[in-house]
Image 1 (cartoon, rainbow, N blue to C red):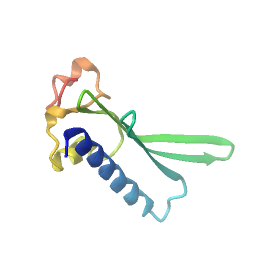
Image 2: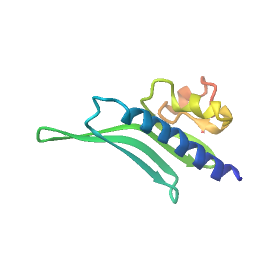
Image 3: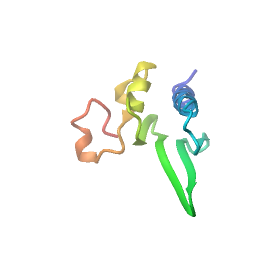
Image 4: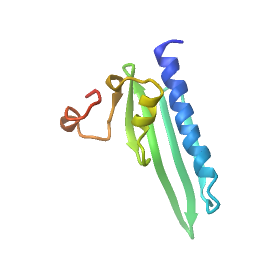
Length: 113
């Protein structure tokens, strides 16, 4: 399996696991959505809901693959998606914490871009 295909599968696996755990909550009323756009390599886990007449949308995780690296654009999970991907064998050199400013990324154990 080539690197791009492997990364796509691992991202979908991790996001699906988070989504499944979230759906097990007995208090869960809002709707979770998984969005896997392989043609543009964007992967999202989000929640949509209504509170009265107000529309609510929460992006829990947004990941994209760019230049054969995994860019974590947004991550509101407790453990961190990067941690989950490393446990599955992804090198920290192939993960970019894109939610961090570029000048801060050099101080992390992950790729800068």
